[in-house]
Image (cartoon, rainbow over all chains, first blue to last red; front, top):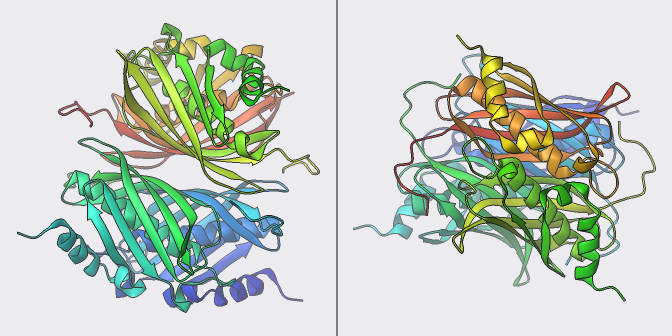
Length: 142
Length: 142
Length: 142
Length: 142
């Protein structure tokens, strides 16, 4: 029987974009997920910080994992909100997401993204989002 | 004298992450910005759609450009919110952002992201965010 | 047969909180809703502007109406995001909401809230939210 | 010398809308704020739950207090995002807000709103928002 972490890593390995960036799943259990990304020069913007899009990608992905950990099976991020709290400067980004509330039809999750510089974590973004089970498409959206 | 589009393209060229993805600035004028991204296999997630993080990156960047077009000089995205409305399937993503309200201290902007498949645009995400001028740091955030 | 506007007004009349505030439904058709609120002293905060909570209430309610106009039947606001763009000063607040995208399971809507002072409308808030059909509860949320 | 709680209560007493609803400030210290509202029939919507606008008002106000506790002086809510996690049924609503990150120019805060029924608290909404110091208006927003 495959454990949860093994399953989570297979999903990540199946995402070409996560492979392009180099994301690692470092924690995945009921209600919690942690992703890590070692920053490389190609992840930066014009001032030498991690691009906001990299931070948003990592938050989005961690929220989806956290929601998936309680909803099970196939899920997707319906929406999310992200506050950038400080420039993402450092060697590594860590996104830690947890479930705030979950039911049959949705999980509301929060995620904190930290930049690690010289071993010290500093919060660089705070996110909140809604994860939903993927429903079989019975009708196309307009 | 350098025109606005030329300036905008230099900023994009100075963002290694935008270069990694291949983003193009296709419109940039007062109150408006449009970015385009030709989708490649490495932009996808496990179901063959553009990864939500790619869509979020493009929306974030277009919002920042739109806000910068009215605030002038150095700006950053303070926060944003993104609704995914449909899987991003197609050859190209187009993010169109516009300014809803702007003052001295902030610009509130909206962005629609479209996936173009066989020449037809379909909305795949709707975003809203706050862009602020970069202030000289007189005190570090806690 | 009852028309849409009549139905919408009955829903509003059945909301004690909307009656307490004095909200009027002034437009309601497929994909669109408009609510109006004549400001009274009890709607204000300590600086004489409409309280942010009044603006948020009006935006939330207009988003729900807009979503309900395309989803039909019973709906609720799953989540929303609101940017305050300027102090809400004037005699009347008008919230205009429209549907950005809709499918079987959700409608993504946007809403602009205007304060009307001396006949002139000024945008005081911009909102975006997700409206969903009310599902029969088969399992309690945790 | 007036203490923080006394100051916070005077601000609330100066908000006619908070007086109309009957909001109480029950905790206010550096980085934290708690508001309580005893639900009355006029706070409800058509299904007998607290109206989403009441919940949004309470979250908005608690976020502002939390931000104000670290920014000092005059502050306002720039924007907020709110997920409704469950119908707000009960006798009392409690909004607990805390500061996630703060600097010179903004405080990012989160707020959980609970409905208390028969002595039991259940989360009915989760919010996140940006609080900023009120700047002297040197130029009107467009």
